Image (cartoon, rainbow over all chains, first blue to last red; front, side):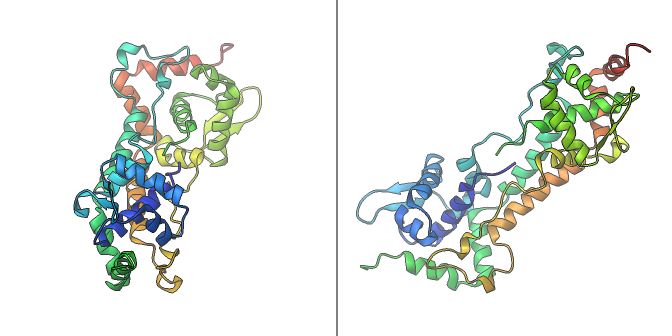
Length: 160
Length: 160
C-alpha cells in the first residue's frame, strides 16, 4: 500500500503558503522545492480542484490558501491529491463459490470489511486532527522562527 | 492509496482455515472461493512465508494455521501480503532547494512525516486489535453457526 508521492509535495506547498504574504507563482514554489514545475503543477491543481488553494491572476498572481491554515487538515490534502477512496475495497468474496452467502443476508458489510473500515476511520481521524497550521507551528518549533521567516523573505518578489 | 487485493483473499482463507478440521489443499480453497488457483496460491505463499500458515505434505496434506487464530491479527495478514512498509514515505523535501534545511538539523523526522506516522500507527493499532478468531466469531454472529459448519463439511474429504 503506497500513498501518492504528490501528497508530500502538496503538504510542503501548503505549509509554505502559510508563510507567504501574497500569492506565490507555481514556478516559484517549484524553484523553492527544487522540483519539476510540471510535476508540482499537477499537485497544485489537485489542491485547487479541492478548493484548498486558489489561483490569483495578474502581475502579482500565484497560489494562495483559500481559508485559514487552521481550517485545512492533513486529511483534506491527502484526499485532494490521493482521492477519497479507502485503501481496502470489499469485493464480496463471501458471495462467491459453492458455499456463497445469498445476497439477501449480505446487507451488512462483512466482518473483514468492518475491521478494515474501522482501521481506515482511525487513520482518517488521526490525519483529520492535524491542520496545516499545526504543521507550520511544528516547523517553527523544530527549527525556530527564522525558517518560515526566511522562506517568506525568499518568496517576496525581488522588485519590491 | 490502494491495498493489494490479495489481502482480502488471504483474510477469507485464514477465516476458512479456522473452520477446517484438517489441512486444506490450495486447490480446494480456490474452488471454495471460485477464484483462480494460481492467484490464490500466491496469497497462500505470502501467508506461509510470514509463518501464519504452513503446508502439510502427503495424501491428507494442505494448508493449516500455524498457531491459534486468536494469535493471528488482521495486521499480521495485511503485512504478510502487502508488506511492512508504511503508506507514506518521507523523501526529505525539507533538504531540497535554496532554503534547504541543513542535514545536521534534520535528525528528527519532519512535522509532516510525524503526522503521517501517527496516522499509520493508529491504522496499525486498529488492525492489530482484531484477530482472525474475532473475524470467525463475527461471521458466526452475522450468519449463525451453520455457515462455518457448512464450510467445515464442504472442506472434509469426500472419501471419508
